[in-house]
Length: 110
Length: 114
Image (cartoon, rainbow over all chains, first blue to last red; front, side, top):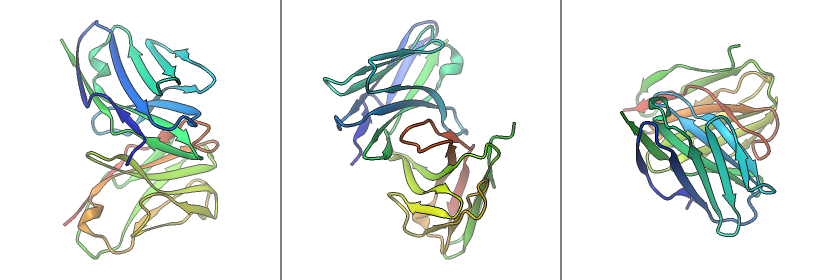
């Protein structure tokens, strides 16, 4: 089975609202986490990453939060736009391996 | 900046045929990877390479062969294609090990095995 998973396979968001995408991981030894965005017909694109010695990292309109106590990772997208519609994957690194979750499909409503 | 390119974009083949998917990167990244993406499974690692002439198996390597004679190229060969190998294949690269740094992905090859 997979050690990385997303709580919801789909998420529908009103344009302009904030989006929160969640991810649970099972291995407490994981030390590096990455969020990828995959648009239809394209390969995954890096969004943001975070290492286990941090609990928050901000990028442009995106924030990643890491809660090691409950082994939870989230991606927050501020002021969601139509271009944010995509599948979002979290990935974790443990035992020198990178493991991807199944993804959450985000749909932005106009 | 060409980045990482895959070819062909789409491929239809028949069971038992040999198929080679191409991957080329222009960044001189040491590490290259092949993943397959299937519904319900996310991205699964087929093979990876840490440098030219160094390759290693991933979690779903059976039925696949890779080579890396040059740093910039990492072709993936299906020696005798099966229907279960119908999938979208992504090549990726990174400057250092994927466990320490983000991957850059190609646009994918959609392979159908009839």
